[in-house]
Length: 444
Image (cartoon, rainbow, N blue to C red):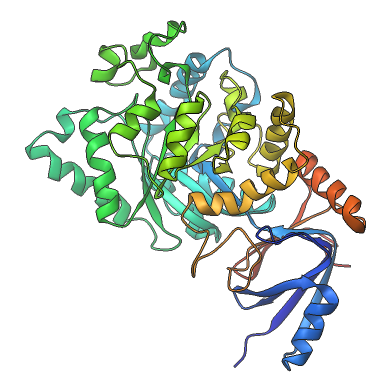
């Protein structure tokens, strides 16, 4: 039997991979987008094909479901840490450990409940897919159980050369793959080597090969903190690596190796089109060139950087250099909300402050929050395509209560409003053709 077709029409439809459409519509059949276009054209085409349909009219903007390219859903219950600005990253990390470590030892840790709560918050703010970094196995099924798309990345952290030396190497690989094998098969999994400052060289050398042999994507924190900059930088207070209560890593003992963590990661073969990084706050122009050459996307998380006492990400530089970017919220331990549109707004303000004056800013940031995130997760093309409203893509849709006028000026004003103040305005989220969240009185 033919699956029923639903037309979702609105004042403005944003396919992302093609121009915005005033009085647009998206035809959805089952779990996939059939096509999008002007509402009269979509209706005429379906009639010409002899296909029956129902229509749901929305008085705002239809966009692809958002893609949160970096989050830790299991820390949703640590919102007290993300409710104020910390003096610096050092202070935030110590405060985080003070909360995290007792919970690890608890007989019934809250990770799964917190992760499911975080997943609900994502869906209610228009997110359809996420890169969720999982540190404790209890949280591994948050995406699957909530109906979110994306990848759950098993985080590898606090591992030394000794853990991966000689006879222990196969044991360590088996342990990591064992964790990943316990993850739900859908939506999928990856490996997240935490950061160059929390792993020794041997695990950093081994993990990319493990991921690639098993067709798993990679994701890691990189250039997030001042201690990842070149060690001849004036910022010397971060040489006290041991105060982070981590293991005694060789790179820490040496006080760095004279190069940025990104160049170090590149030298070890971590970067590539199958990897995306989070934060990239301290990236230089040379670092960005390396990322472009490797085809590696960066998930910018500006509100998390602010809360954790870090510098602002150089979003204007990323945009002007043409680097592929995505957007993430990080977790409530370092962010006021899990609404990705709040981070879009923060990046918009930062880009203008940093001198980015092009009128394409709203469109580029909205693309980063959708198709850019899809690219970071390896989902920008093919059968599993997300982040756009194109024929054959999975039907992930987000509806925003923002009115749009006709003509170019009306479209541009609506795009600016969505990019600058779209947080809290999601009215409905559809994932794979199924309504996962719907506010009252959504349809006209």
